[in-house]
Length: 214
Image (tube, rainbow, N blue to C red; front, side, top):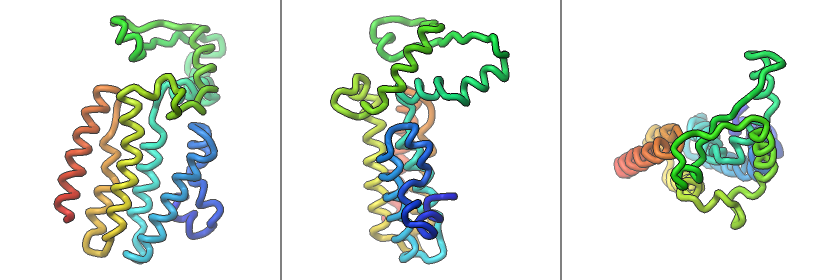
């Protein structure tokens, strides 16, 4: 059930759409912030274009995508998840062992061109990183000041500003373009240099559509 439906049927539940994913990702505040944003979009959308929920649906999906970026903590959490462990056992058997092939940005900056293979030590490292997710975005986050992580946080704020601008003049005549703009974060795929190139394409398309919308 999307956030827009929750906003109409249960005001309390609307504050936590997609809650389990984002709680695992960060803290209880993250899904609440997203839920509040989507509920506001749905309220203003209902007034401007009654019967049309496409914009709030797009915002629910794409704000979630931007907020749940795959940083070091999230990669560690996913590798430590029960779903990942179960998938490994199902495919390779209960006696299988895992070697993680990693090539972190810090290693590349030190001139290491090959991936690092970690076995049991990888499990230990991932377990520690997963528990550190509360540091994400804070001043003491050891990874948070990198250009890539800074960019990912900027994209969240930019998107919320874009949505506010769309809502300010939303009507029957421009709602199609508004929905197209709200869907643009789906262009942002991949990691590091690939993702950065996609961000450039995303921002160029955003500027084009925003200019056309007037």
